[in-house]
Image 1 (cartoon, rainbow, N blue to C red):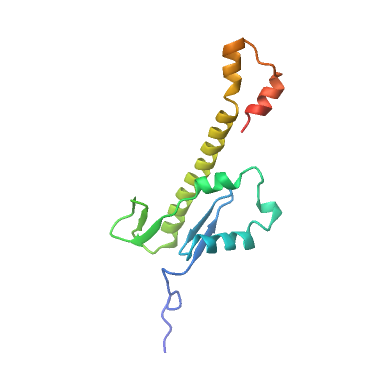
Image 2 (image 1 turned 90 degrees about the vertical axis):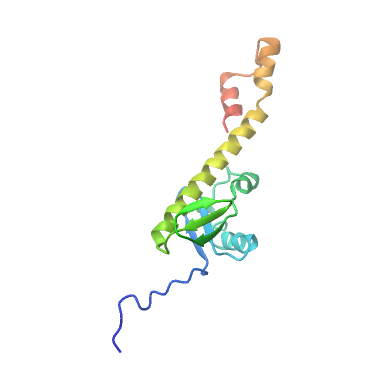
Amino acid sequence: GEEVEGEHDVFDASTPEVLVFSFGAVVFWNFASAETEREWMETYVLGIKEACDDRISEEAIDNANDELGFCYGDTHKIYRDVVYLHTKEPGEKLAVSFALAKSALLSTFEWRLEQAIERNAHIPETLARTGRINMSRHEISIETWF
């Protein structure tokens, strides 16, 4: 018979997909569990030294992790931890993935900043109490950098 254009381009919404972004975020679609996602990460990302940055702790990563469901609807929206996609176009899923990935990246920076503030709370307290800080400018900059 005659071949119809796109006949072999069957879209299966239940196929697991992974989007890895150059800024270090990974977005999973349709993975069975967090354990399956972790196994994928250990196999394809964490084992590659050049791909991993030791500066971000496991706790920061867990803090940035969002578990969302998704479905297809009449309009695009995110409501009550569910992403509603309007189309099955890969570009729509890519756009949502990019936004979620940037949000997760921002969460890791916010978490690291909170940790730095907590870790260094003694510096302004000491300054207020004694009028001095017994650290050099260099030591302060190293200590307060997150």
